[in-house]
Length: 534
Image 1 (cartoon, rainbow, N blue to C red):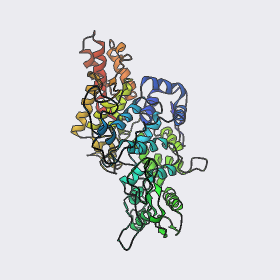
Image 2 (image 1 turned 180 degrees about the vertical axis):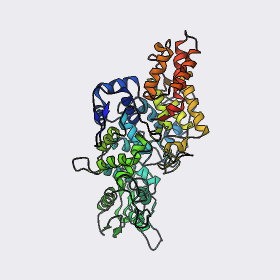
Image 3 (image 1 turned 90 degrees about the horizontal axis):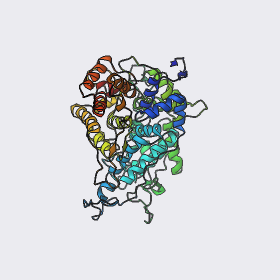
Image 4 (image 1 turned 60 degrees about the horizontal axis):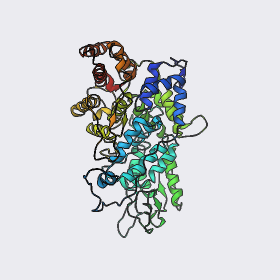
């Protein structure tokens, strides 16, 4: 159990309580299973978090760079048996292979917390396969988010800014200084979004995320159009990296292997209006960029703006202002005078009093399990081995094809209100009749169908489940349901729901242990109580 104090953290008393440990694993991994619960129980929440923060990085496959325009020879050959190059078009010019690798990592990578946080970053620093569908380009970008998941926010913001994938997506690559003769003006797209979506938001915030109001009760904008233009000028003169074997050009064509490069002749060296200062003229390109990044990074909005979104994606859609303020304070100072230490921020989010505890009573607490998490969590609960093909297809059917958001605003906005309420519920923007049925269909297919290898995928293994922890309990339906209640809902399942599942299990022949286990798992997984993680 834990004893609340007036600090940012809970005081943990051994032995850990299972319900709190399962909730921690729901927040900090892609889903608990028996092994992860046992391990976290053995060391406690703080040590488990620290262990995960120190774990080596699981890397994506480094896909080979390909020409931006698909050669006529790069086609999909459906002839069997499949070879590593049979599906040239699909495997190189779509995100298919990267997306299925995402699910392999979500289900089985040991650095679960890093993978979960990197997924959160991918929905804050959005780029999309809708625009950039080359596997190697998106892999390189997503690897930045994985590598920097626990780094310093300033470094993450800098690497995102210089990524050619972001440069292509939001038009910073080959962005030119003003030219009065041709009428060229710097593109403002990245300049606007880096502030609006990636760092400070549009309105000034208190430490707790609430709006700062002027003397007339009106919110205060964080930046003006002049500031957008100033940053657009800061972001001039950067081009794509030189492709392997190609000659360097004034403005390189589209290529994504490596960070963007400087072309000083296209950079604007004049002074520029930024958020909190006027950047002096004649800075070098590197100094101009660093100065602009620092101006954003040091803005007081960054702590609450970023902290609240990470809390929403890991713990609860409706964090209290006090929770946001506690985490934002750690963003501002990790205790050693360092700003933007994301390792300290993630630890603060997960070990905060509002995250930890045996039960959570407020009706507004929790979050809808978004499709990618829902898909992976059920597979992990059954100790699945998977090649990711099936899981990818199922999440796509629920309107969340990972790394392929419909716009820079992600799959859902952080301020989405659950219809008919005043409660924040960002993931509910994806919930509709169609996606709700897709969730049920996924659970049904996962539990009751054989998921065989896809013959179009070289090295495919399909998805296999392990029922050995549940079938021995089939002769005791109440014990079986209790096990699932603890594994999937950390003991929060209502008595009425438990009784309904027990009745359904009893309707299955007592000699059919596997079907009993599958029936119970399916009914719990598709229940509304499981859909909302509390």
